[in-house]
Length: 114
Image (cartoon, rainbow, N blue to C red; front, side, top):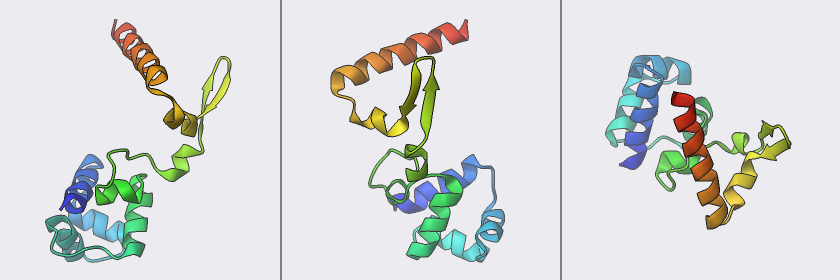
């Protein structure tokens, strides 16, 4: 059922109707409705198209992970003053490093709001 919920959530985030998404995917509106109700599972080709369109990974759509970042985005780099950091490197941080990064982000977010 998580797949159905994720498709609907992602569609609504893009402010699309079922009909609009169906037109983009070149399928019927009833297919989108069936996917979102959980009555029908999309074929793998459609899962790939949905993942690409919403810029998420298929595991996220299927509910196997809560990390939505697409595999394409993992190859991107974050530019900093000291150079570039591959996004994928963020997933290899140990718990202490993650805590430090989290604190930096919180501090920056607080500073940015002022």
